[in-house]
Amino acid sequence: MIKNKTWNQHVVKKENKSLVLETIRACSPISRAAIASKTGLNKGTVSSLVSDLLEEQLLYESGPGESSGGRRPVMLLFNQVAGHSIGIDLGVNYLLGVLTDLDGNICLEKRVKFSDLTYEEIEEQLYAIIDFLIDDAPPSPYGIIGIGVGVPGTVNKSGEILLAPNLGWKNVDLKSILEERYDLPVIIENEANAGAYGEKKFGVGRDYNQIVYVSVGIGIGVGLILNGELYKGNNGFSGELGHMTIDVGGTKCRCGNDGCWELYASEQALIRNSKEINPSLFHTQEPTLESLISHAEEGDSEAIGLFRQIGDYLGVGINNIIHAFNPEQVIIGNRMAYAQDWLTEPLQDRIQRKTLWFQQNDLEINFSQLSTHSSALGIAAFSVENFLLTI
Ligand SMILES: [Zn+2]
Image (cartoon, rainbow, N blue to C red; front, top):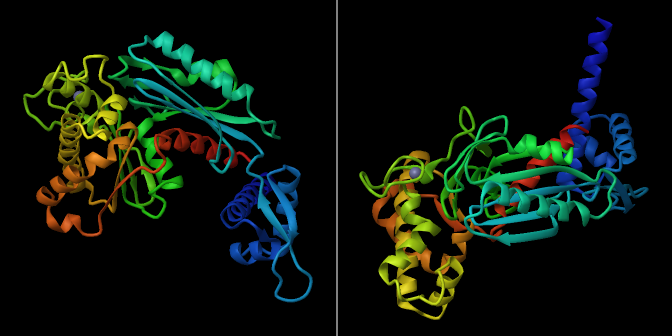
């Protein structure tokens, strides 16, 4: 009995402490009295929890705030530099690593590009980026609070990468490998799920609760925010919409299916089409997304046409997804978002002509404004949420 009572008090205290910390994070700077009135906790409880949090260096006090008469209250602020989080976006042809504070502000970042590396070679590049971010992190009371990696593949609930077709990876337990090497909490998540969360938390998705985030790189992944929460499906495998069939009997995909959406609307489609349409057009070098963008910027009609074709095919898949989820917002992110100028019109045109009219009411189609950082920021934020739960 007594043990239960103590246990319950412990749980209640922990919940109240989380509530106070969440309130301060959301409303910083804020006084103790304002926390009490916002949370409904009594002032004594708030004072004691605030003392704990100050001692743990998760808060700091600043000068007096506004007063409605009488003595001005001391204001409390969340100490967002109490620790740092590492977020890695592991792409098929790049790695982006960021070090963020606990509010998701980027303190350091490093990017490398590559093509056709083996698993071992990518692992070496990954270690090099993580080592750099750890070594150059500013000193803080909690240091590095976790490492998160977004991957272009299917990840199960225990963080194992089951299949990443465009990398040629199968059953890779990257979580255990990184935990062993760095002795830090590690999260592995599908990059589109991480990107959807990044957009909801820091990007154009902040004010929306029904979001379809379409990550367009070498492949296509989709992350879903439904009713304000990341939706991962029964076993964590939702959003594999890059592999929905849009052409029965079409091109063979590395996933085993054929006619998959990502074969027509992604960076790999762009490169393939560019080689097919005019092999000699960009003969001085292998065409890349970047080289095709600079040709389009110079007004090259063939390059512009290639992007317009991608925009149209993006519309084909997005049309299907809109019909399934009736979202408020579709966000196009990852590397292909750089080509927004040429994608928007054919994409919008396809939706307007082919999507049922009532589905188009209250629907926004936006491009990511976080540039290519949605996934890295989202995965870094997952570690922060986990860390704050342990406080
Ligand atoms: Zn496929």
